[in-house]
Length: 131
Image (cartoon, rainbow, N blue to C red; front, side, top):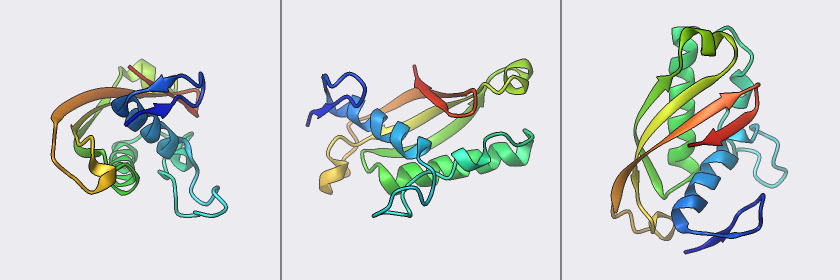
């Protein structure tokens, strides 16, 4: 399956499409989609709060649940927080994901092709970057 990159309009492969889906899910506020109010990650609502261990746990749980609900090509194995204390104080929080990649998950075939890792960085409150 191929898709279109939402910023460059270039053709992207299935894996890049799944990553783009995760970005869309996690950057969408709950209740902001008119015809699908339940869509989103609930993560944006937590940004700007004091960083505590409980907040990191809430981030991890919300992210894992949102991906499991809305991106069937990924099944989350582990989410690990990243960044130094100074980065976190400056508002740059990162997460390392380990997921099962199921390229035909959106078609109901949940066969795992491989285990992949990718990083996600929340910066300046709303920006989401993949590396």
